[in-house]
Length: 319
Ligand code: BDR
Ligand code: CA
Figure 1 (cartoon, protein in one colour):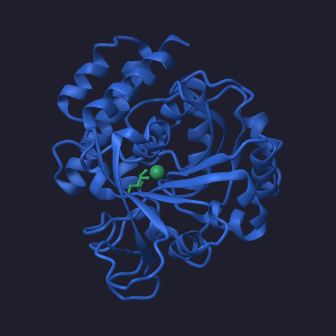
Figure 2 (figure 1 turned 120 degrees about the vertical axis):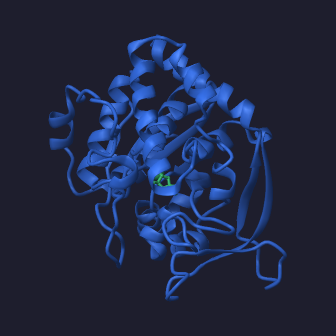
């Protein structure tokens, strides 16, 4: 099994990413860290615990509360898509030990994440499904983490149109300085970006909702309520009939690369432009002839993805 660390900001699609990370048969989830993003850090952390609880994650998997702000700028949360709680649409029960467990957490979150990763003893894949603040700080403060990393796989960025401004995707736009650190770091053995072009092909269609509903359990019904909320907010904000399930695609990449087509290229992060701040400038045709620093996932086998995702949900349900 491949050891993975998940840095996330739950969030509906992050919630499903946690489930896939914990229950995909070829992955071993060694820990979760949280970051501000879809909601405040308090909410995303509380939500990570909630998801761990309802999905029956073993208690030895740590959940570490990470950074609550961007490196240099103001953070925007996303209640219009994820609701005021970050998991709108269902009354997800509190993790019974949430208060006790988070009370013990101190300000050494970076050190704690670093220690957990290096103690695995095998190269770990770091998956990021939120803004890249924790990841950038880890690389800056503990550059020696390189020896314990296999690769970093992130959901974020776009080749063309964005989803928070016309030119930028939410996770990158919320902390472009952090993204710049990650995309230029010499301490990342391999960097993989799973952009909007790919995630927008993985949609929660009525047929997918029906498959989830047919699992017919309190757990699947709660997930379905969450996803129906996501369906309705995506319809309101983007006029999409079926919303894209972004974050689990990054997990699926690590679990089964055969599902993907990819292309290696140079990617720059635009940090200062008036209209294109937060843009991932993808040199698809190698016009700059710069060193190729990023593997961009271009396509996914959608049907296979959903089989894997629903299988993980079933396993979590039985647990
Ligand atoms: C990304 O932004 C967040 O709202 C989602 O959870 C996902 O990680 C998509 O742009
Ligand atoms: Ca996310």
